[in-house]
Length: 440
Image 1 (cartoon, rainbow, N blue to C red):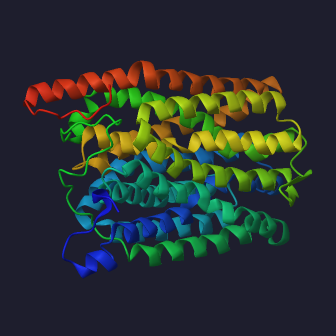
Image 2: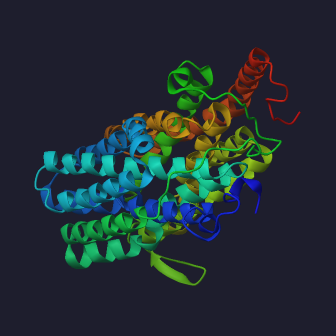
Image 3: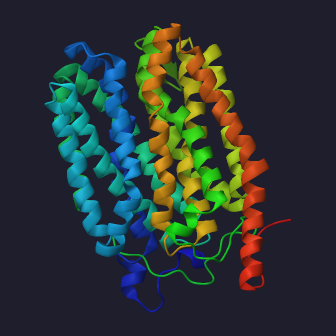
């Protein structure tokens, strides 16, 4: 085990108990897995809700947009409460709210009530997400890309094990019963797992990123972060990539239905399921795998290089889905490519935030960047409007693919040079030799 993941010396509690960084990581992963369905399971509820109440897709998807906006835009304020009350208390509150949200959705007989459920879900998920990612960044040093990736993998892959039960329960017992039961389960598990979480220790000088990773030594306050051009370049990139991914998450069921392949059986590697269910399961797995894998890769070759490859792959994948995704097998495989490439933003962006802006305010600083996901969510209902106006998903997918390719170019041509200049300027100002760890 590297120094970045070594517990405090001389403490048996640290070595074998709750202060072991890996224990904290696992507890965070479990909590993240339990809020995954709030985002990734939503798509299987959209059409059943519309069929019962006659609400249009765009109106129903407002609830999803509200959820994402609240989940992201409140994280900086929730992070301040984490600093004051600690992760255990805050995640417990988040778990209760996450469970309550789906109980509200179960009884929603009007759009305002459905939107209220989205608000409650957003607050609960935001608390859990922001706290657990912040814990991962602070408990691990040189492996922070991997740690953030493993933690966020719970959010990406957690729904994979439950998407089939969700779908089957909706068909057998109705979406209302499914909302209620899964809400109680998810909230209860988070409440139990939250009792394991502890406030992380202060970082050590030895806890540096790998040589290929740009890293400064300056500790930025949130106000200083907002004045940094690096932050706003990252914000734009986050919006560009997240908007396409969120559209795919929210609309995948509707896209499959409009392609007339949602209920067509698909067999891959000896497993048979209808195309939509297969795609949702595979996508959640791929989304989850990509986070630690690409987080680990970014620890080795650098954040921006990994961003470039992943964003470019996602852009190409989206264009391929538009062109070739109208058959069941191609739909399943190509959507898996898209989700694999998209998932890495939730490991590499928090790691980059910690690299560049320091550890002291890492939770709050990443929380501010994470609000870009809420900004991107504003475009999700627009996808339904564009599709209704044009009669196909082509324009929506073209825009999403182009956004990713633009972000890929920005990673290499804009973000990395800008970070190099800002880190070098900070080093000269503070006269600290070797404050920039980077490969030539």
